[in-house]
Length: 617
Image (cartoon, rainbow, N blue to C red; front, side, top):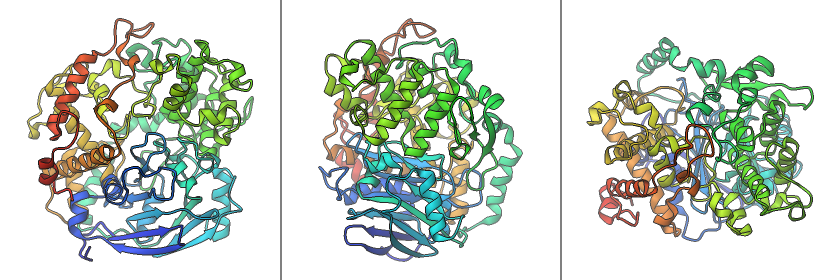
């Protein structure tokens, strides 16, 4: 690759070979950046090109990739994000996860777009990156420490409390298959077990500090976009006031809230665990990411009966729902404590809570007893047992060693019909959003290369009114569709919104900032100086999705992996969704049409002609 590069990029890749203790740099060129954009695109490309079929996710051959986008670190609302990816120890396929905070912006200011970690260290280490220089440092004294202890120790050692730290806790060290990578104390790259990959490499943390601003082509045009958001803050008011989850209580009315391992529709005590209740009880502040005025991140403090440390922030909707209604726990301090423990240990709240809820149902059905679990009796509503389970998972102690494997593996180990109610797609536990009320969303769970991803998906209910289609009309998508429609028009809508999400994750900007397709293309143009537009950006996203599919196909994934849990085809036991579930025949027919729209054959394999057309090398 040559040194020619646009504004918006440092054009530099930092490669750290932990086995050889060798650090090198690579230069990106303009053509590559334009084809894959950044963030999710860079992660997907390098994993496809540099891993081989059969790579052990927890072996030294796996690579852990941190990638920023051209907008990361630009002073624009929502620009404090980056992407991390690897082969997943949870799913066995490709994994990526986006995260906010300040780490990505700091990496750009330190002079790098991408960090690729290879091999595995012989003893614990951390990487220190400061203004274009990187070093490996001993981390033996950090091994076993929580994220809070780790961050403080690293900042003390570097004598800089503005250093930003991406790190694992004990869960990553113990290679829990859904361990996450924490950025600071309450921003997680949560999905797919990336923290376990980091732990397998004996890499405790990457600390970054930089002082150079990101170079942009048109600063004045970026000011226009920044001012647009400031003039339209009403669009994000609910996030500023409550954070995520403000509609949690209404989820029992709409059917969206998962309850009792996705089985029930009613949870009478839901008001005990909502963001509104948190605001009126334990919330002590709201925090933000780099350059963002929204301040959507809850900070909570509890002293009695459980102590919850405000330095670990507070739960997003996903954490509230999975440890609350999905485990049938309505004790708010316990739910807040569960979130704090996950942040301290470095655990994905969705997979941790989803796995615990699944095992609670196994207890309820008699498939597990206390004799199987060394006395831990996980029953729905038992918040003390739930909290005990989190400790055991992170430490892989006793029954926690089995819980650390995730829902899919536990179900296969138990047998006796457990797979019938194991809630996952491709091994990834779903986000707390109910597909039985929105058929396109269910299809999105099926076909997403990373598993049951709720972020890169179609919120059907947002497209049931004509007012939602202003950004899609230039693409010829003009008509609202019922939420349960799963016609070819809905499949096209899913594909288009999925592509929009991939553009967002590659730029990289936050999904809560209401930038539409045209504005995102304009921002990329203002940053890079390219004469880009919506059509080119959608093309980039199609290329990235196809490369991710090729990665999974190479590792043996087939059409049989693009399936929903059987429970989503069944009615809930009560509530608004008690009359029935999704139509399996129609969902699978829609899956086949999605393949056709993507240029894949009916087995879900990208056609050679499509690969060539997209310029995938």
